[in-house]
Image (cartoon, rainbow, N blue to C red):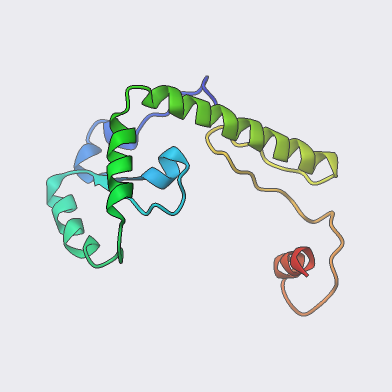
Length: 142
């Protein structure tokens, strides 16, 4: 999410293509969670074997979603769409981190992700036999 940082793909490093599998999905790349469409890129000796078991994993992928995925991947404005999405996600992440910090919850601000991790120790949660993280989640949801 930080345009000033360069992401180097592991498969591009010397000697890594032969032993790297890159996995991607339309859901993650274009923010359409639930589409269950993805891909693998890597050496044929590995990806061929992966395709043998993949056929048994998904239960169905709607044909219109496959067509839409192919269109967005080839869309002339694809990079602009992705840049707009990055800016939107960064703004939401920045808002969330600022909000957590405003109420006294220390939050990490990762450069390459749109999520955060925060320390919930300052939040008083009921005592009990379960681990604190479990009690914290119960506290938030009940």
